[in-house]
Image 1 (tube, rainbow, N blue to C red):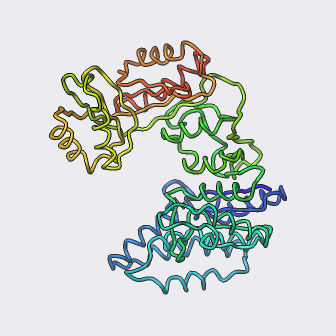
Image 2 (tube, protein in one colour):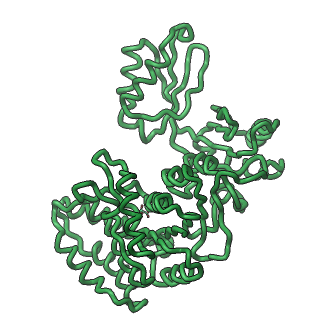
Image 3 (cartoon, helix red, strand yellow):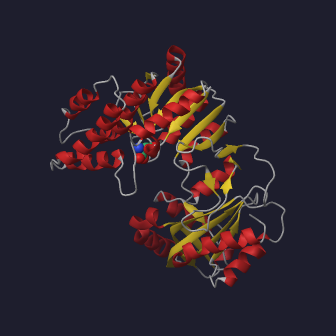
Length: 436
Ligand code: ASP
């Protein structure tokens, strides 16, 4: 049995729905379908989810704007009418709109993007609609209750055999809706594959698998045929916008492979994400992320003061800031964190480190981190030499270098202004050196 998940652009309109039907009918093992909300039909279009977030704010602050909800209705109406579906989606939408008011539950409102899409998809495919609120259950701490959810998902599948489930949301024990973070339908699909012991989790989008670098920055980067879960997690964390980061572990833990496929080109094999991706080039891919900053902490004789490092890190912990790297010198070290996470607390953190720990703090902003990732890099000498040569040839200063102990990734920190140039140059240079 295969769990399939279709992303926003794959369910954007009736012509996309037709492609999905052909895909589902091409393989009878595709019995579970998870859908996102209708996404962009063309660049510059608006996703239904984005309309709903905006609508939520309008309702909350009492600024009615019929255009937003009408735009949402129109997306579903087009699908229903073009496919001549036997479902009164207009009545369902109208009934929901009667609940609009300043106290509307924002999560519930946003979740309707997926909900109504799944209602239409179930009618079109002839699969049973299962509301995610009934099967994907959260505890009050916001974590998915995997035991309860597994029980409910299995029961629904055993009862109906072929099901369509909206992604992205579930419910607390009292029925209130809770959302995963943006792009979270990937997570729903991943848990369903796990709960049902799927042979594979197919994740359908609008690209034919993963490229070895961002195609907007690198010159025609190669497609990756096979990649390990760990490699993908490293690349996703560092900005490769492929799958929701949290959608990998649930299937990884039980060894279910993910196949990333293209709804618009279904015969392309896409990318397989698996435990054993085999031998290949040393480097699998490059990804980069802007927007990091370094708190540079200096204190005389710091290296002899046992516990100083811990005391500094505890301050970041208290502000719930996750630390990415800590490059260390003799009487100084840097704490590299995401600027977005640290923004609100920057001054308080400096104050605590300076006043309580007697150190001096300066900030180094606008750092870009670039990850060079590959399961076959371990034990392969000369990779750093090639990387440094590329930076030298392109006159880019390296501020930080870190390699994970398993040699799965090499992280280079540079000035944000050089971000695009560095990724383009690394891609070309590492290909030319036959490392990628
Ligand atoms: N529709 C939601 C979003 O736009 C969730 C998803 O598509 O996975 O983030």
